Amino acid sequence: MELGLVGLLRAAWIAGILPIVFASLPCSMLASFRTLVSGFAKRGKIMQSSSQYKFTVPQRFFSHFYVVAVVWTTFLLLTTWMYAYRTASFISETFFYSNISSYFAGGSNIFSFHGSRLNPQQNRYSVWLSVFLLLLMEVQVLRRLLENLYVFHYSPSARMHIFGYFTGIFFYIAAPLSLCCSCAPEVFKFGVNEVAEFIVEGKHAMDDIEFNWWNFVNPLMKLGWWQWFGAAIFLWGSIHQNLCHNILGSLRENGRKIDEYVIPHGDWFEIVSSPHYLAEIIIYGGMVFASRGEDLTIWLLFAFVVANLGLAAAETHRWYVDKFEIYPSKRRVIIPFIY
Image (cartoon, rainbow, N blue to C red; front, side):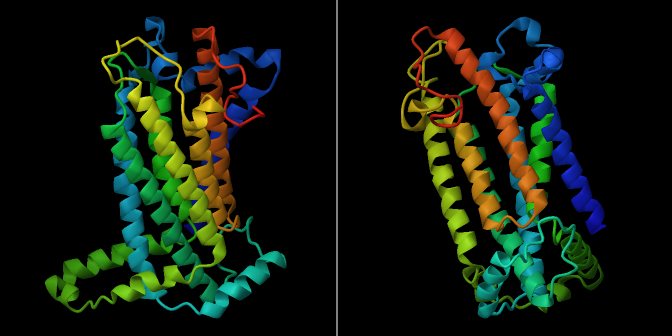
């Protein structure tokens, strides 16, 4: 089952990345395909023509993404955390130092489909690493949900392609699952067994459980510098994404008309047209770093984020340049000073 889950997730990410890569190739034979793929990326202000409203949904449906993400990520986080507490509560502190050394010595298992080659201590570490990554994802999706509810003011006419809508739903189901795919099958089995035991034993099964709250967090405190440096990168991206989202949200305030647009300024908007996309790439880059770059599934998740947001950023930059004659010429698409 584990092999099937990991293989399915990797195939899904590759299937999402390849069309975007092909559409980005400078080949005239792919012009029609490029137009089709770019159409899927259009939303909001860059999808204003009524002729483009076919197969679209209101952009305010973005909130659906984050509701699904919060519910699903919370479920995975709590179940994985309980599984780690019940089955992998002890981790030797010396393991983290030896684990770092083995990484530099070529001990990475980036292309392995599962952790069957890991010793028991490494398996415990893998489970708690999944908890740590899911914690980061929980912070991300909770913040995005709150921003969607209280920061953004979507125009009633703002639309997005229905394919993009379903892609978003898929992303927020597959992304958290990719962060814990190394132990997900065991976690699901654990959850099913716990529910079955509760149904059979009832309240008495819950009374026998004793919680040691320190054991819930102590293994996380023992994680290595890879995890904490990755978390710092994640936090850096999160802070700037929140700042940029607040700037975008403020553009709808002060009684502006529905179809009135202005050039955003402030923070990273001074260097790129889509700094909130750049910040999201940094956020998921922090997750890759926190995972120590050992899992190909997480790398493919990151590659999809880069490809998808790069395409959307290119469309946004093109719209800004066409819309405003005085658009800052030094402002790049998504990568400062480069693209």
